[in-house]
Image 1: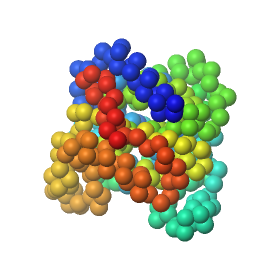
Image 2: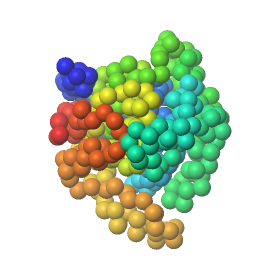
Image 3: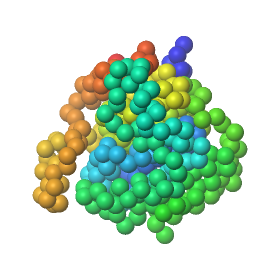
Image 4: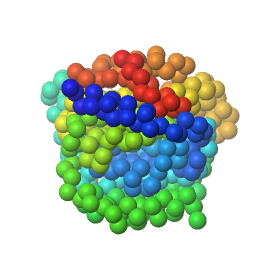
Length: 163
Length: 163
């Protein structure tokens, strides 16, 4: 039995107890959360989010690339969110390698160098700041009054505001 | 008090009860979930995920662009995940507009046409299939034995396998 099959068994249980079938499409709290994909960072538990509350956008690092700007533009323009919460975290995998190392390794194995940046970074606070700046600099995101950036501590569970 | 401030109050509560400070960086279940950012789709509840279990990657639509391929490559190559679960859902915002409509509207307002595709789609199953194919076609993701695609029904809570 694969792990995916085990998760599907959990999904059957979720469906049996499901009572949230009438929620509207736009997020009730009007917030989009952009966070790292890290397994230890659970935005639902951390921020007390329930089904229907917020858009949750995630990727390796919680960084801002073209695809996160696309998601945020759709979130605000079509579904009315007005606040953005950006979360990086301590002990992040993105701190453990350099862009060149990662892509050199892939090129050596596959014969192709990835045409994208890995978005590896060396300092959490600096990358939170520049991620927020990438959002503020984007011409397609209309509402920028509340774009706040945080670092989550995976050892203590604390959320610290950076910018 | 902004919604973000309310979420920070929740985060203080999470920290007070926090007991998961010793979890390792690699996801315990070896799975990466790629899902839509939709507020009604809670991958933790649906799949029974706990802190430490899985990478969770999310964007508008649960689509596969360069940034999701970056995240999946990092997930597998640096942190050892070996299964991918892709989830779209019913009543998705991405079904409600066309790429041209969305970008024409932005161009009219800002004077700039976004240089990216909105990734809007017209059929859920078709987009799940082509999203899985984008992963299978990528040269940088090493493990493709278990790449399965699903549609989550926001009215019933059911998860249906497409491919």
